[in-house]
Amino acid sequence: MGPSDVKEGAVTVDGLDLRYVVEGSGPRCLIIGSPTYYRRAFSLRFKSSLRCASADTRIVAPGPAPGLVADHFTIELAVADLEEVRKALGWEKVAVVGHSMHALMALEYAKRYPARVSHAVMIAMAPNLSSQAMAIGEEYWRSQASDERKEVWTRNQARLTPELLSRLTEGEAFIARYVADGPRRLYDMHYDASWMWKDIVLHNMKGFTHIMREVLPTYDVLAGLGELQVPVFLAVGRHDYGIPPHLWDDVRHCFTDLTYLVFEHSGHHPMLEEPERFDSEVIAWVNTHRSAAV
Image (cartoon, rainbow, N blue to C red; front, side, top):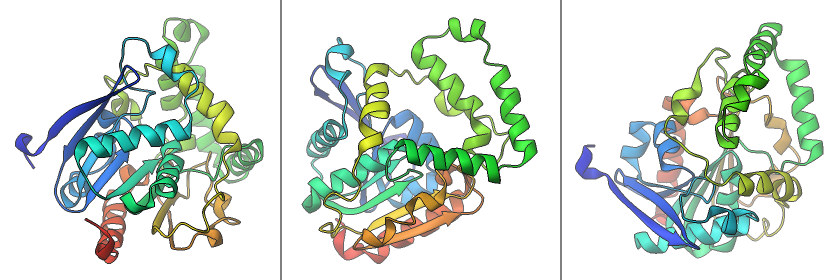
């Protein structure tokens, strides 16, 4: 796949430029989130086996007045924006892919636009971010993480001094904390994920804070789930100490067509941490349901 195989564009919504990057060939796949970040997170094999379009959300989208349009960022708004991207691409039907909080956006897109979705792939997310879910995550970290892992995490946190954080913007501080949180998020407790964030600017932190604190804690994953006929692939990591796999135990049976896999050597990024297995499982799953794909 060379430079000529990559197409870039943008859709302007409410004064924000939602960028997208398209690459690869095969069944059409719409990945929610920063094109820069997710082009790094997914392997060349994945992007060569599917026709992948990675698209911005309002959190990373540049524009003249982000605060005016992003303070009340919601899943519904993200879904509507994603539909604008799909229409701009001219794709009739897509496999929609979301990682972390974007996984619930992918599921909600499939619920709201089932005629436009051939498959839904959810990666490393809980049914919601309620206080109960967060407490379960904390207990998983306390009881399952090794002492060495906890020590590495503590050392990482100690480097985030008030002086250092005071020199950073709100978005830069979030990224610094996210990278330092690696032992909670990654199978390899020493992995430095800072390269994933290079040149990424979180333009709309107010919107990000709103959706994390006000929207996702009360998200009802069960609403409309029984009527959803779109096949869903749910990938979770055994070593995701914030989003432990068993958070889905009471929900999985509510899906009409669910493939659920726990990646034993992954944390929050199975597509990055176990790319060979992740690619093989997801690509085979998409092809198994090929009759539904465009």
